[in-house]
Image 1 (cartoon, protein in one colour):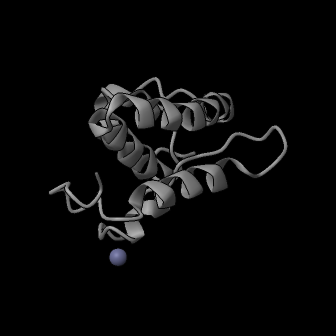
Image 2 (cartoon, protein in one colour):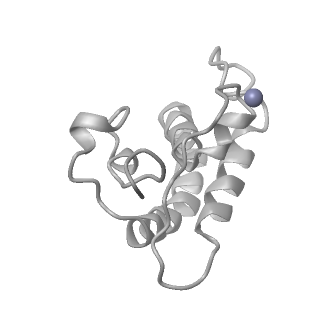
Image 3 (cartoon, protein in one colour):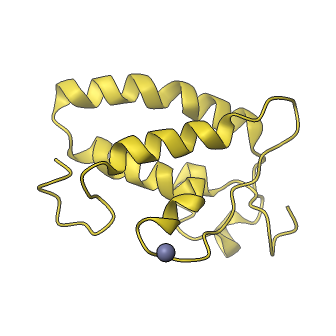
Length: 116
Ligand SMILES: [Zn+2]
């Protein structure tokens, strides 16, 4: 699927990288909230510095996979989503300032300009 995708961000290995970056973001233990960070460069490697990009990639993959592998990936992503929701804070102004605020994982407070 990665190979057939015409999307610049969906290259062979991108799903694996996205899963690893998502897990790495959620790894710090403790109760302190986590804040996604804007990537400094928009190339397909550096974009993964922003965990929200990793989740975007997983979203794209999930939309395009056939049912069986999709179900398999959903089983891996769902527990991470639960932790993400637990460890990040809602952004009450997401509609005004977050890119693609229609995506739930982008309606969370990020670090940087928003004071996170
Ligand atoms: Zn780059």
